[in-house]
Length: 81
Picture 1 (cartoon, helix red, strand yellow):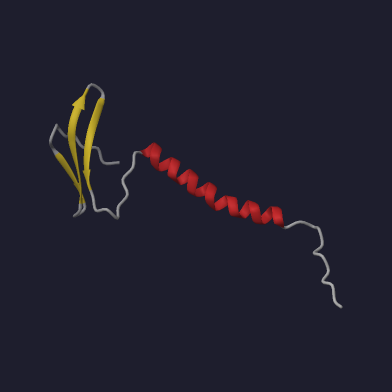
Picture 2: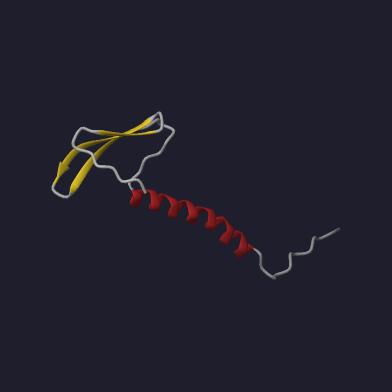
């Protein structure tokens, strides 16, 4: 992990298109401003983890539904006249 020190209004640049600026320091909290292209999602870690959890649940739900439909009950035989 790279650890950098910054003061208020100073920036960190990541690549060519992401910059992070220290907007405010109040007590033990630091407010950051992030400039990034729209196609790059930026979230607080707890929000990111919640999104990933919901995505995992969504992918597991169809599998659980399919599994519950796979029973040992034979399919009804077709009726021929």
